[in-house]
Length: 417
DNA sequence: CGTCCACGTCTAC
DNA sequence: TAGACCTGGACGG
Image (cartoon, rainbow, N blue to C red; front, top):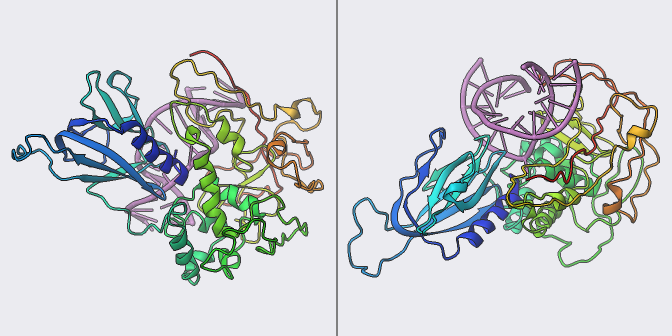
């Protein structure tokens, strides 16, 4: 669940599920967790949450007992405690009955209800963490979604920072400035503006102002960033929402939040809306290469001048559902068929269909944008795919040629459970 | 069965 | 700038 929108949706989930719920006793931790114990015990307390960028803070608030004046029993909390969570790659909150406690529920808050329900922090890979009596991590910048003005201001006033010497796609993952942006968001944001991912960040950012000129403006003319794509193709991002890069770092994540619980609620087990929302990340036909930190950058068109030498496209076979699918009730999942193996029928292309958006007259994205664009995959062949893949250890590794992977969905609907 | 990949930090050479 | 830290799903053999 891990980018800004998911963290925020997690906080909304906690507030919605725990409204009016009374929790009691100690906060318990799984045996395997290496995160700190949470020294909080209380006869009756409530839980609320807030988010900031890629962190969520839970507040445990003791309730005053009627027989107030009665001293709080020793060892019982009488003051609120705040716990700050980071989700790593797989964290999320879940509120369920005791007997449905999810696997990998590492921190648990027990309700006082008869059939006890438990709010738990679930984290399969355990890259997430929490800090009792914690505060927002000091080195993280303002939230891209809810501290927009200060987020802009901080970047505009620190453009000389060497962090901006990096390619824009890598700078976007720097949480000191872009608290909340993650791997899928950077791809979606740069794609909307047609900004080559490996262009120096400062080049893209210099000239931007602290105030958002686009605020309140409907479709300001583009003259936005002169996204001159080196390949000559102009394409000024028609259709796109107006705004500069910093504004999209704010609006694009909010779109995900507005998709509703789908982006998060593990119970939904239905990420089809989210998948349909993606225009670039993991989308068939887009290119992808590893950045200097080994993270997969999805994009279309020109990679830009700072593209890692020798970096190759990562593997990736076919993928289907994006994330977990916690079952629960029947849940029929919507079948969002995306391009079914179109390639298959096309002769040619065998092994890895090369889908590197070759010139192939980039059809004007013009209308038809979103919805439609996702299925059209005209097997651009050309450049046979070389199977060369390297492991992470980069190192020399020729095989240049754009190669790509294709991927098409396989499973879906799938019934059962 | 084994390899590769995943929404992210951390810290050690 | 590499690993380290983890589990598990999708694929390939």
